[in-house]
Image (cartoon, rainbow, N blue to C red; front, side):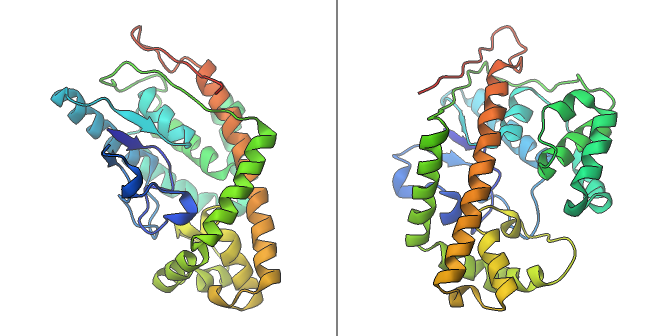
Length: 280
């Protein structure tokens, strides 16, 4: 049993640009926590964590499947494995989003550094999502070390191919996504959710697609040029592609740093748990 731990693959319609696994690639293994939300409304960390815990509890009760939690969203993994108590954090996060829009990420980080210095040291000062998640968790409960039991001992494995090879693979992946119909996928999302129209208006963008690397860059170029997604020409596409590569590579560096810390941390606080990070 594979449980998705990618914060973009949980959304229906974000398929090509998130490299979401296809049914033909599953090789008979059941995959859960894919397509469980619409991109028009952000799935809270609290909601995801509860869904993952529910799935783990069902598997533990049945005793007939080994769960494998797979994905690159570190906060998803840590919230489940470390047993974070996130009760009420979803409501707090929505309030924080109103108080600290993306344009005020520095202000949000300043508050986090004051309230939870240790948590602030673990996140990048420009990582808006991570900062708000940490703030929400801190403000939702004063019991910072309270945990929720996980019904499995666990091991953590990571694949690190090094920065040079990772950068090259990111470029190959993005070009393959474009060949496989990424622009058509973005155009369909735009038809359903008016992404380009929203991008032309000032203020907070609520649609997850407009905040996702590999999607938002093409939406931004379309909004700035006054063109529809399908009308973007060679120069437009080259500019969006270059911007997307820069954003994805920067994010991959944060991921590599985060997962190194995950492997060295004590998230396996129960004596039966084992944490391993393998360089493969």
